[in-house]
Image 1 (cartoon, rainbow, N blue to C red):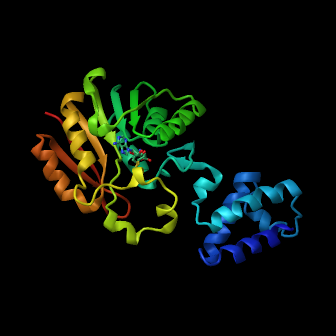
Image 2 (cartoon, rainbow, N blue to C red; image 1 turned 120 degrees about the vertical axis):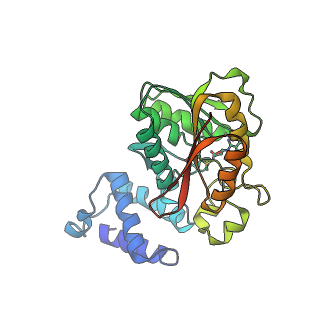
Image 3 (cartoon, rainbow, N blue to C red; image 1 turned 90 degrees about the horizontal axis):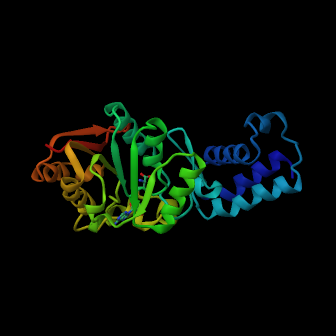
Length: 281
Ligand SMILES: C[S@@+](CC[C@H](N)C(=O)[O-])C[C@H]1O[C@@H](n2cnc3c(N)ncnc32)[C@H](O)[C@@H]1O
């Protein structure tokens, strides 16, 4: 098949799922990912005949896209804060909001320090911070051994040293850890009642354990971290959270009830209350 015929096959196969503009964009990203071709090649060489290997490579992705598998899982790659991270269905695809959380921490925190990332997934937050602050000693925990394999792979891939540990943050034994200056977490925070407004490709493909929190206890993970923070943090230590905007007010109240001070809310680029920072006295 020629390049333009292949693009048209994508258009006809995926038309029930995506707008034509989105399909063209997916196609361009795929040919760039597999062959490093710029999108202009489609306009300049529409009749380019794909080799059998090229055709096969691109055709294997089509049924996955048709089954609404997110692009990042199809190509097993996600770009996060300047790093190309390997991702698979064991980890959440890192989100742009979380890049904003990383940017905020980097803006606020300059000095060498000890930091712990709770619920690290692909290692996105921990590795992005390490890539920008090589002197920081970073530990990262997750309950999922499969996620930790992905995080360790990414750590090796980028030669960024982070201590990845399998722990349940809801029952974390803090006695074995050095005191930390910063805790950061983007824990599961989606309420089951929010399912109906979520895309099928998120619900069917991303790990439930990374997304959902019980409807009757939306602050479960935050409460555990605030509690453990009292044991883990140095005096004046800070906590940075990514949050569900729906729970912001209740969470601020919870932070105060644990005795944390200087609680600051930060909005994301969509003007949603998305991040929280606080200090231990
Ligand atoms: C929303 S994802 C965040 C992943 C990554 N930090 C990011 O921002 O892209 C939440 C992560 O918390 C982990 N997790 C869920 N329950 C946990 C628990 N009880 N203890 C530790 N980690 C947990 C999940 O496996 C998942 O990797």
